[in-house]
Amino acid sequence: MPLDSGHEATELDEKTMEKRKEKFKGLNYLMVKLSPGGWVMPKNYLKFANKIYNFEMRNTDVFVLTFPKCGTTWSQEIIWTMRNNPNLDHPWASKPPLARSPFIEHDMFMRIPESGSPSDPVYDMFLEMCPGKNPDEGVNIQLAGAIPDPRTIKSHLPFSLLPSSLLDTTKVVYVARNPKDVIVSYHHFYKILETDFVGTLEDFLDYFVNDDLVYCPYWLHLKEAWERRHHPNMHIIFFEDVKENVMDELKKLNSFLGTNLTEEQLKGIADYTSFEKMKKRGDTPSGKKDSDKAEISEDQKRRQEYVKKEGGFYRKGVVGDWKNKLTPEMSAKVDRWVRDHLSDLDVSFRYGIGH
Ligand code: A3P
Image (tube, rainbow, N blue to C red; front, side, top):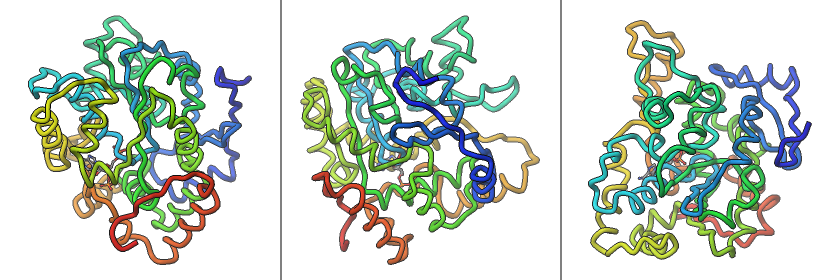
C-alpha cells in the first residue's frame, strides 16, 4: 500500500542486509527503499511516515531542512536563537537543541528510555509538554505538535516526503554543504553512533555514492530543494558561506525570517552559536548521555577510544577537512559522481582553499 506521499516501500533483501552487517557492526536497522526516488530509510520510518506527511503546520513555523551533516544543528541554533532568544536570556536556552527545536522524524531512530536509564532531555521535554500522551505514538512528532510558537522544526527528509503544502504554509531554510566534507562528517557520525561503522572511509564513500545510506540519495535531496529556490518562503544557505562570513548570513536570515534584530543582537548570536561555544554547551544535539555503567562492552570501549582520538559530534566544524581524509582517488570518485548527478544544477560547491 502506498504511503500518503505516494511512495511505495521495499525492504532490502536478506543478502544485502547480511552484507551491511559486516560493516555496520552495531545497531542494524531493518532498511527500506522508497520509490520513486530510492530514498533509504530505517523500516521504522513507515510507522511515522503518514503522520509526518500530514503534520499540522502553522504559518509561524520555520523548518530547517538538510541532508545530514550539512550544519543542521548550527543553523537550528542560529534560527531558534534569532527567533526565541535574541537577548540570550531565554530559560529554555540551557536545554539541548532537539528538546526545544524538535527533529520531526527522529522517532524512527529513537528508543523510548527504560526506567533507570541515563537522562534523555528530549524525552523529559516530551513528558513535560505532552502529559498523558503515549510515547509509542512518537515522542518527537508529538513534541513538535506541542511546543509553543514560534516553532523551529528540524528534518532531514527530502521535500517529497514532507507535507506537500510545506512551502506555501511555513518558511523553510535549507542548508547545503559540499559533498566531500559531508562524506567525512557522516562517516565520523556513523562511527560514533550505535550503528558502529567498522568499514574503511572508502567503503563508506562507496555506500554514499551508491545512494545506500539513510537519507540518500544526497543529490536528489539537494535537487528537490534547489528546484524550489525561487519560492518566497525558501531560503538556501551554504555551510561554507556561514563559515566564511557569519554576519552576512545572519543579516540575510534576519530579513528572510523578519526578525528585525539589531547588529548588536546579531553579533551576540554569532558568538553564541560559534563552534567553540556550542561545543562547550553540550556534547550532542539531543543532550543524551552515554550509559554510565562501570561495565561496558568491547564495542562501546572501541567507540569511546575513537571519540577520544577523532572527536565527538562537534568534530572540527571547518571547510575542507576532507583534504586530510580522502585520497586523491576517493576525491576523484566524488568529482565523477558530482558530474554524473549534479552537473545539470547551477550549484557550485566550495570545497575549501586549494581545491
Ligand atoms: P564536522 O564533522 O565536519 O566537524 P549536522 O548538525 O548537520 O549533523 O552537522 C554536523 C557538522 O556541523 C559537524 O561537522 C559539526 O562539527 C559541524 N558544526 C556543528 N556546530 C557547528 C558550529 N557552530 N560551527 C561550525 N560547524 C559546526
